[in-house]
Image 1 (cartoon, rainbow, N blue to C red):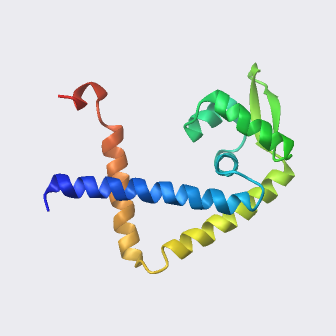
Image 2 (image 1 turned 180 degrees about the vertical axis):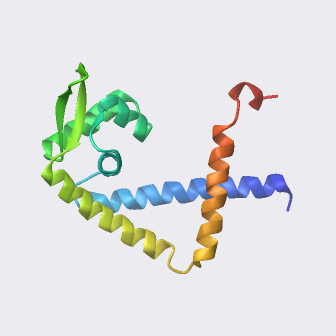
Length: 151
């Protein structure tokens, strides 16, 4: 097998795995009354604390108008609250409510269990190698110069 074929298969497998994982996790969290987008927002808020809408959109790598729809639904579920940002009254700071923290804990527990089941038969050493490879791929991607990709 050539290096180009290996690379193609690796990227195809990673992409396919990511699509299947997102779809499966979305189905799991829907049983909890959430969506994948809302669960991801809870994870981001748990990791980074209160964020502005722009910061949260950047963290989730989605457009602000898309995030606003997600936040509207989360607010209706009493998972988040929006407050004026003290530094910029035009900006809204997003924070989890007590119900949001409970929902986060539930989804976090589900995610932890799902990860354990998916990786159950894979030795720790292999997980560490895969983690190293993915981190290096990410660093290589972030280091690419878009203007030099076509040359």
